[in-house]
Image (cartoon, rainbow, N blue to C red):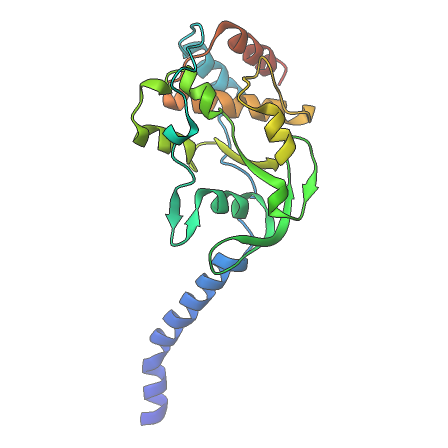
Length: 217
């Protein structure tokens, strides 16, 4: 009886150990829960947000540097923001002991292309850092800019085809939209959601493009 009793007494510790092992395994090899950025606000809410954004001419790029938007920040252990997004937006993603994605599949929402090498995927800032600078972030602290550049709570970061991200550059929706037409409605909702949250302004051409896109959703 004493042996059985002792084994029963050990069960909570054994379960705790098993839970820790499982959690560690999920961190490295588990499938993501959403495989996408946080869901942006609805079309109706985006329209309301857009009407409330300050409309003014875009500011200057003078003084802008990506270094003023520190990224990628450490999120947990050795995992930085890029690796967290790669894990989140991919399927079957496996990471090494340093949290680097070593395998997985990523479908780029911007163009519909599928990739199996993390090196073919960029993490796009939906509202580009230079665009944010010209829209009000030039007056922020580096800590505030770091928050925007690493924001995992709002739909500001997304894993996409690298050369598509590079073709976007720092353009706003008046000058660039995702090549995949079916994603444009989601994209403009993401854009407005982020600009609203951070109190960033819009210029007239940008606002017009956003309104047209939202009216077509």
